[in-house]
Length: 314
Image 1: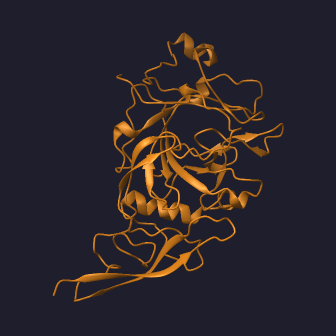
Image 2: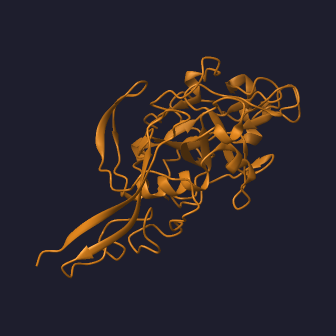
Image 3: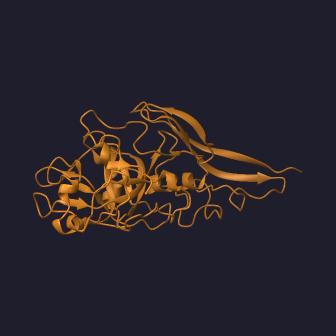
């Protein structure tokens, strides 16, 4: 007898206060006819409903009845039209990256959750104001946190999909519990000439990686970003022939840059980076440079074009 699976819809949650659409959450899965159970090795990661599903990437949390409701993993991939990114392909909820995205969204549903996280820790990558206590919002990115312990960010991602170095949040109102996660990302140092894109995370191809240009976070200040140019290189490395090239072939380290204005300014060298955005309501992931759904306010700071780019032919 051919095995048939039935999905038991446990709850349909509708937010009456906000008037937004409800989110579906899958509860129990069962099988009949002697087929393999969906919470067993069936080739599908059912972390949203199953405990210890062997098909899920190592390290993903099991479903917890106390967690904030999130969409089901069963949604397939699809080509969608986005307001800021055009036509893009969102990945299936039960893909490897989709399962990791659900886990990241569950652990860091809003900005305050990231601020309070301990293992690992995250801090605001673009603090603003005279004392750098505010939270700058950048166009295409929102409010960004980076993994590390203030003021030192981690140099490289761990290589695990459920352990991003970047978290992006929508700045909505004054209450930080309402700043919902909209995306996440992974970063690696780029400090050697001729370096090629990272290979530690096999789910991403070389052509999907971007270079984040060396430069300065304006903190204290408005929290924005300024790309470094050759004038920012220390005399010693400039004399040795180092240049900030447009192709992105030269490795630029933090120590190669002069300090601007304050000894406490936030300068950094070049980094490899990749950004993953969560589709509204479904949380299916899509890879893009900036938020395809433009979930930023009209006063969000513009990010210079030089800040992110694809590596040329080196």
